[in-house]
Image (tube, rainbow, N blue to C red; front, side):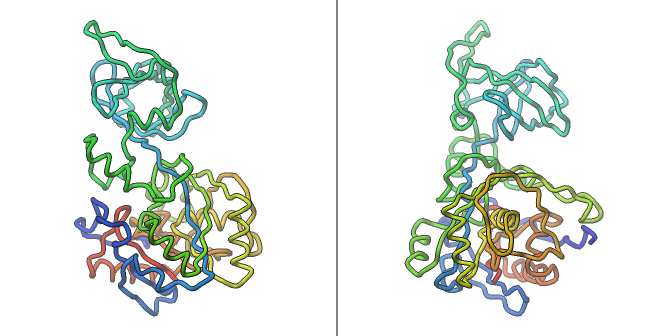
Length: 366
């Protein structure tokens, strides 16, 4: 399949720059997989389209405050994104302007108060803007008048450090600077209300529409909930650049499903009720571990690339946001509901002025 078939035109003003005032007040396009029906609704009304016994499978990963700012030792400004910790105090990061740094360089990572810094040393450059940093044991410190740092402490956990220096890792199409007041709002809203396990550097955005009140309302209506964890990586934003879809190598992400939630999912399936994946991350995880319409509790990584032609084993319906052209996420939903049908639904959403992408509106594909 040619990658260009995953293309469509989106007016730039439909790229949502802010979340809705209330999570569940976002719009919901209900779409039959056969393409036979489109219904314009609100996310708060999603229960109208669900049945008692249905199971919503949510990704409970927690987004790290992975974006950071700082300066190089020569005073040049610095912006980076935390990717992973390979060992305690050693970070894998992506740096803007990484070509300007070299192994041995000192970097100063700025806290949100813009007064203190944490020192890091470049250990290695890996290409494509990726570097390996050693976070110094001297933590957030003041720069004294003679230019030397003051203060000392232990390194601390990644989450602790990033909470002090980091900003929400919003996708590049959402424009933000390093304003702490704006970041405080994004820290709350670029996170699901059920986020529990820290490790993602991008949000599972289909879940952003749920409120605690809506979840409780759905439970009262007989809807079941199960949780998986997939730590979303930066590869989720990587466009498909290969001419042919099958030549693209998808990103790898860590996931886990425990015994309790595997049991909920399998019991639902055995009773003939629907498994509804909330987001492409939940869908990928379920399909990775599915065998004969059952899932096993496991912890592993997945590089499953779901594209048109794929036969789904577990997922019966899906909640998802609107995705970028020529993305692996659009390929996944096209596999689920046929590319022609998906593009027709997207065309309808554009005509009706739906809001697109991470802070945008949602679809329920049934």
